[in-house]
Amino acid sequence: MVDTPHASPGPRTPGRRGRSSLRNALVVGATLALAAAGTLTALTGTASAASTLGAAAAEKGRYFGTAIAANRMGESDYMSVLNREFNSLTAENEMKWDALEPSRNSFNFATADRIANHARSQGMKLRGHTLVWHSQLPSWVTNLSANDLRSAMNNHINRVMGQYKGQVHSWDVVNEAFEDGSSGARRNSVFQQRLGNGYIEEAFRTARAADPNAKLCYNDYNTDNWSHAKTQAVYNMVKDFKSRGVPIDCVGFQAHFNSGNPVPSNYHTTLQNFADLGVDVQITELDIAGSGSSQAEQYRGITQACLAVSRCTGITVWGVTDKYSWRSSDTPLLFDGNYNKKPAYTAVLEALGGSGSGGTTGGTTGGTTGGTDGGTTGGGGTASCTVTYEQTDRWGDRFNGRVTVRAGSAPISNWSTTVTVTSPQKISATWNGTPSWDSSGNVMTMRPSGNGTLSAGSSTSFGFTVMANGNWTAPRIGSCTAS
Ligand code: 9MR
Image (tube, rainbow, N blue to C red; front, side):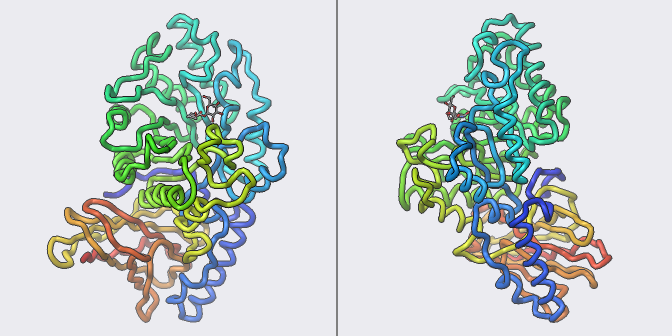
């Protein structure tokens, strides 16, 4: 399968953020020097690991964000952790309907603007949360007739998206529109009651016109377990939207976990199945009740699941510190009430390839689909795998490629494939794999970094940067060998 070409928002342009881009530039520079000396095999050992969540995620072509509360912006500890660790912000409450349009057609953007301006000043991305939601909805909305509600909804979308046009990378256009439990029904909100099923579609169409460059997401909770009715209901809606050309670009998985709603073992399957519909997936409000290593391992699993899905473009945790969490007594976040890093923090950073584990460089996000000679090779028994290639980024002197390795109908424990570039091209960086090189330096054999196990049908990706040196030919990807 080749991912649909898609211009994902991603922290992908060198120079976008000061510290990490400078470090990336140094790493690329160092690896180029090695390449010139013919010692490219040392490549992955040359990069120092990223030491913050945002930098580590950026090296994986993702963002790592947090919800922010405007009334905490005066607290220096809060702001220093926020600025150090995160590269995407979501307003926890300040962009909701009741905050922005407390009375009809009277908009108050001042507080939300402070958050948007902070994101811009720090070179951070901004997620928009949320346009159409049954909660935190002012009472004037709930009293409208059907026609008035329709025009109020569209007006709200237009005004709010207009205010942040060009700043918000992804908007939660509709939030929590399905019931919990086994019914799979639409939530019986005022929008549903007055406007019927069509309101969701109408909201997305209005949103597309209001800011054609923003990613349009449907966002919900309890949609993590693939076998749950609510997950299936949302999936069917997205599938229907894609088949009819209703504009939707992404699905947000809030990911509020606790003992009653634990991280499901099929989480990766859920993300991949949605991604396979041709939408990005984002983890939008992550928090996990608990403490210590149990909490840490669940955070690690979520992070790994996102990294294993090439269209999982970023993770947002729902707050900086346990102290200000919406469910503080569950201590669900990465920093404790004194802003100390918790084991969960370390687990996420490690899973992202940050300090404590091997360093990588580069970034991947959607882009041009490239060629592959792909193929399938059995490695014994029924083990098999396929490879697909896409170019994910291009700059004036280089491009990034991503190869997705997918197991066939049987589980595999190891895989390898080759990437051949055309001289004078040089591969200057790789991530998510263990490369080795032929004597020319043009043929890279890539094997898993660490455990190469893939369950039947599941996939993993590795990436690389090719210095074009004037030649923009797509690399040739060899067949995939599995065992
Ligand atoms: O974290 C938010 C909390 O401060 C508000 O009081 C609450 C009101 O509904 O909303 C919380 O955020 C919610 C988010 O907007 C949508 N998904 C569930 C979140 C947690 O309740």
